[in-house]
Length: 423
Image (cartoon, rainbow, N blue to C red):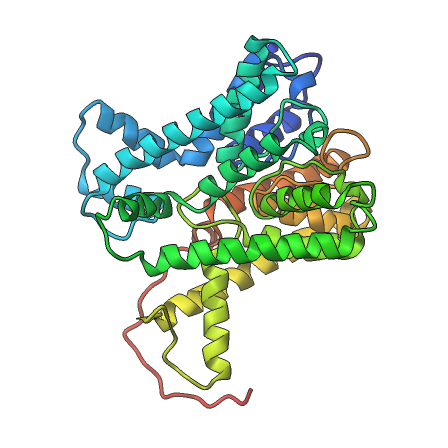
């Protein structure tokens, strides 16, 4: 709401801006989504663009992380309740070393974003004055690392579709932000030989990230080789597929016109957008760890084995059941929202589904409104409010959002006789 009020101020925008559009932009920035109903470089002043960038950075860090870090820097002592909330928001496994972990997180973020800023600034300097190149480098580095997908180019990154520097730098920033702070910190300690073994969580995140990127590339190349990619050489096709595959799950940058993608590709890409990134990072969605645990649970169920395990570590049945619940509840939310949007807006179902999944996964990819804006720009105020709710839900998390509705679970002390159900 604060971002909305700031964007409504005369100094933040050019021309007229409606409340719902300012709210949509603010939510998209804080939820690091990237869907737009206003052209960022055209409709917002430099001050408005700075406001959007700050909202992206806060949204990527998480409210509790940002506020607690400021408290630590002021040498304020954290209470037990504050530590518990911070632990939950960072997905940190314990209470020991929490403040040290937070400092490492901020140090890592600063270093990664500064390196990204320098590389992007030097690249943009070849096309524009140094002052403008520096601002574009800063904005796009923050937007990429926080998996936001906001761009200061009206055509996003389509003007750099064949540029190797852009096509490598932005996806690497997206991946680093999407794997989660715990994974980055653990890799840092592992490289310094401070720990001898990567955790099961880190192994799952890294392996699933590679698998999903490769699968996304394979899907794009097989379905779009003679369609959206037909005017590109084979090496340019690989570059475009790599860029699009990384952005499918977590960020909203694009180097190709997504409206030209085949219906089959649009459909399959919704699965990637729903999956999202890893917990404790800047990505949304149901998270790759939930999908991994669900697949592990299915595999051992098919084998008739009740003791699921991976990397010589057991996986509790509660965690597997929680993964099933997250996937089921998320699917219900998205399908229900898509049906409502399709009936109210009377727009093509597949593109509406694509937009809904993009919002829930806080991805930001869109088939477009026929111009430079997202497909959501065609929606009514009610439809935009629906997308705002999906972005909010996807960033907060399915379980946290549902708990607000159903309330805290109560542990039952009664156990009934087991009933037999035929499957």
